[in-house]
Image 1: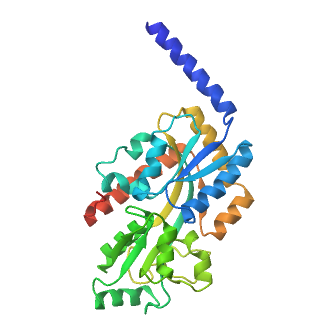
Image 2: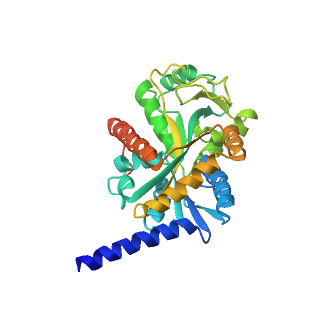
Length: 319
């Protein structure tokens, strides 16, 4: 019996290795767990096109918004581990274990990290009619009129929600949270004057800032962005110690074989090295990342600890 089992195991490994070498032989689905038109969608479609060109097979982006990205994530967790269903995960995956204790899945247990795609600062933007032209003026306004300002986000636990959580914790601003199903509808409601502000992924608001349809007050990263060097960091604006950047990364279902993870990782790295893709990402304010699955795994684990601690300290839950 043991000999038979060992033989089966060897045969399965050989089959996995052979499949990885010829993968993909049909279209691949890349699930983006937020709405079309936002930063996650932009990054997903840019990377999908480049990976599809390299594979000579289409990589189709499927937007599955809802439940703070958890609907799309669960679809990947439940998918066959054959490489034909990928996830473009976001910072929300880092906070979901702490925010949603009753999740039907566990991100670090049920997903296999493939590679970090991009890191991207968020930018605090307000409607031009709001009487605040800096972070300091926004804080003064929030304190002078308690419980009147609110901030939209892509959903509970998203990078722009976590950016607000940290902002409130460090400044005692008391700004309320309004969750949406993606960054795009949150930005649209700020432009429409329905929401005071949002910590939008910079890729989602570049045209609006340039057209002065939104006023940018500060970037969430530790350093200014090359895309808008005139916009100060939020720390420079008066919130000491503030730093909250977002990220996107590729994942497979946990049971995906190592050979398949490495095949997808190699194609991702080749894609991120493309000058065409780099130009798109730079113009959107994102920094291409890359690296090995092990490096991304360590990064992901550190993010879970960081944002889990922040969520617990803030006393927030997602249900």
